Amino acid sequence: MEHSKLVAVVGPTGTGKSDLALAIAAQIIGSGGAAEIINADSMQFYRGMNIGTAKLPIDQRAGIPHHLLDWLEITEESSAANYQQAARAKILELQNRSVTPILVGGSMLYLAAVLNTFEFPKRDEALRAELEAELARVGALALHKRLAERDPVAASRIIPENGRRVVRALEIIELTGEPFAAELPEPESWQPVLEIGLNSDREHLRGRLAQRVQKMWQQGLIDEVRELEALGIRQGKTSSRAIGYAQALSQLDGLKTEAEAIAETVQLTNRYARRQMSWFRRDGRINWLDYQDPGYIAKAGSLVNSWLNL
Image 1 (cartoon, rainbow, N blue to C red):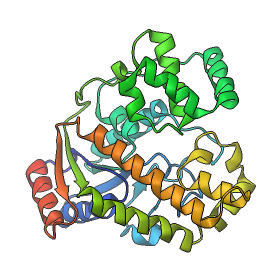
Image 2: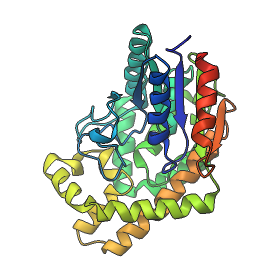
Image 3: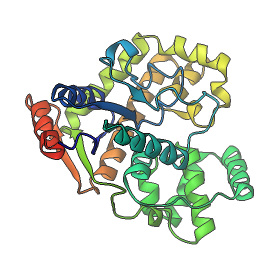
Image 4: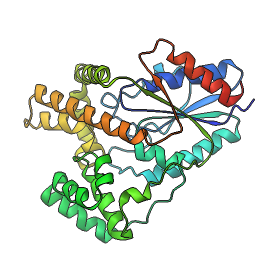
């Protein structure tokens, strides 16, 4: 039995990846092995960002250790390069203890950073500061338009409102003279991995995401954001721009009504899900399952059985 080979559960937001990961972990443990989960959702890195990221509460984790949740302060900036280092170290540590690591999430660049072999271009602080000043002056949409002219492929993969990612893409283009997309080669595995993807028809997922956003507000997202304000979320370059959190801040500022904040969050979440799928479709390693299929957990279990020789 090869209980420590890497498993990844990927796919667009709102498809049930966390629950499937728990089911896979339970199956491995039931067969006499050990399994732990490593988070690959870049907004679940942040302590206190719970409701808007659909972070599983501790009492719903079935006693299975989850890693790289709540490992950053709200004011810290996350980067795929730092995550690559932390996640790979955790994967190797688990494997050395004969524990199967299950990487779970939908943050495309962060998953690619761990699963694929590529190095990140160095940063240029002066150029970065110049681009960030321009971002503050003209806004993310204007910079995204420039990126679309320089590198249409990269622009298609980055949400126009995500100024931080747009700045990084433009920085890489300036530093390397190459398209940002050239830094994301066709997947070549860092180590062997079983990738299981969850998705369903777009219309069903749209309805599911709309319900999820409504539920976020019902569960108290506004109160959560008020608490995060005291901890400095407005100063967080990454956290303050997260979908749902940015809209909640606008609502608190009186710039949007609750209905407007919810509607914009639904729209942006759906756009993000489309971008996730356009990214994941490029990865031929993914075994796709339909979360509406009553047998999808059993099918995932069969894939894991074969992969781990259970």
